[in-house]
Image 1: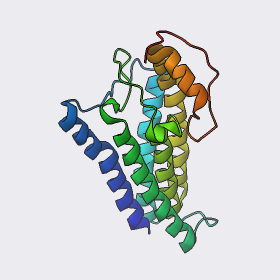
Image 2: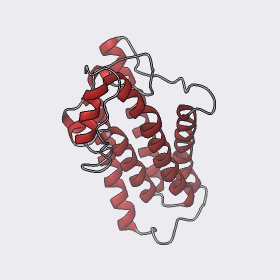
Image 3: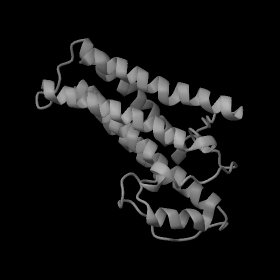
Length: 209
């Protein structure tokens, strides 16, 4: 199952970043990639650094398992690994579905000077960040497939990096760009799961959406 975890990781990475970027380019002539992390030491910089570290650890987890790193005994069971495969597949499919639901507004990263439509329908009516929720789900599944300390560290760092990106980078940006429209949306819809992480309604900036 460790080999399957490595293959699944590479497949998920290729689909979520490579294939989705290609789709965006063909539709709009723009890759959708906004990779500038901003000044060193800024919240965006730290979030991006942590995310890259999570990607590296996510790859290193199954490789370490293949190299002989012992799995965590509490998770080392065929049923746990099989469940992990199902969770990883579900997370990957959901990631792609949520990315496609963003349409031409899909981006990786934030450009403070750019304004895109605020997507609130489909999976975004259930949670404000369904792509990140699905990515964490995928990482959880992969960790269960190759349950060693490196994979577990990758999952933990991914969760931290996503929390940093959403709370310190994306939410302030969306409040500034979409103002009251985003404020109302964030007060109604949970951050990562339904009902949890809703924000107090504090309109900031323009009220248009």
